Image (cartoon, rainbow, N blue to C red; front, side, top):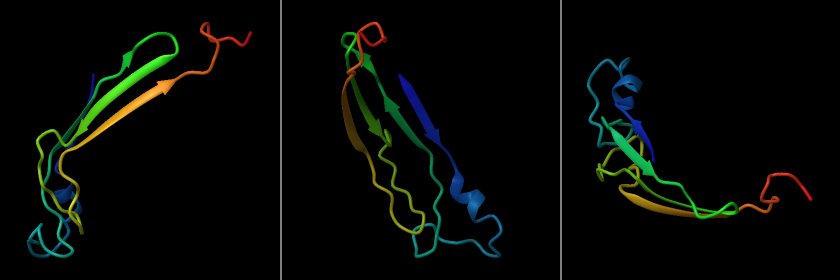
Length: 88
């Protein structure tokens, strides 16, 4: 399983601002911590499946526009190469 975390980028981007900016307004950057998860399962030598969830915590955050909250993805992959990895 692969887990990716994106942290408090908003505070770093707006650190040079002379006054605090409301992260939920136009041109504002909110604080956020997002965790994504994806699991890859190899069915056989040619087939693989990979379901995943972005923003596990369903956290609402803003960086000039609202980012999507929790979203789901699925990947199904077929490898056309020879099962040994070498062409026949």
